[in-house]
Length: 265
Image 1 (spheres, rainbow, N blue to C red):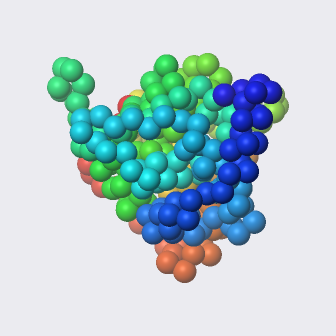
Image 2 (tube, rainbow, N blue to C red):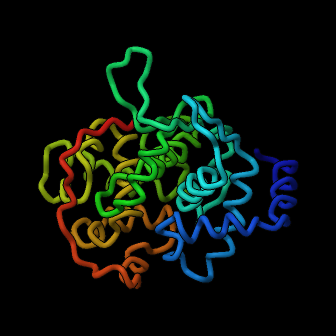
């Protein structure tokens, strides 16, 4: 939703109070919510409720869409644009949610999630929950798919979203390309930070790098600081700093490799 009418609608939605039960869900079911800085918390909640009320959440395969499903998925989406703007999701109209890892008609590949060209994100609810429960693996399905939506906001899945300024595109291309090619070559440093799935193409690299930026920021900042800085220049915030401030984090690192087969698209 864009233009004057879209802005007016969002202004009206922002004035509506958020249900108290949604705040409870955020506290109990969204592990990264307590890490959001106090000064950004109100903005996060405002963007979350607008996202939920604007988008269609559709259950598939017997899935029942509850408030928990809406809030958890919307929180994953909003985290990416908290320092940007909800306009990055203007072309996204619906989120289809399955109660299991689903398959395409050919039945050959199990799919955890998809971002499609025509304004739809498809997610496996168990995969979303599993990713949130194991953030240090840097494999978070909802974050991955919403990163694809941001990538597509400028018209094409190419690993380069709509950046903040024209001058940002040259350093973005240089840094992202260098790390993408290093990952494809199997560079050990890259593989400690990023899943190998990111070596498939530039679009998948951006989505995988986004997962690590939000889920394993200290490790990324320590081992590939230029990549962290480039993503920080786009996304804003400083998740590495927030991770260190968390009482649950010791800021120690492992290689985070799970050895599992990825099927996110």
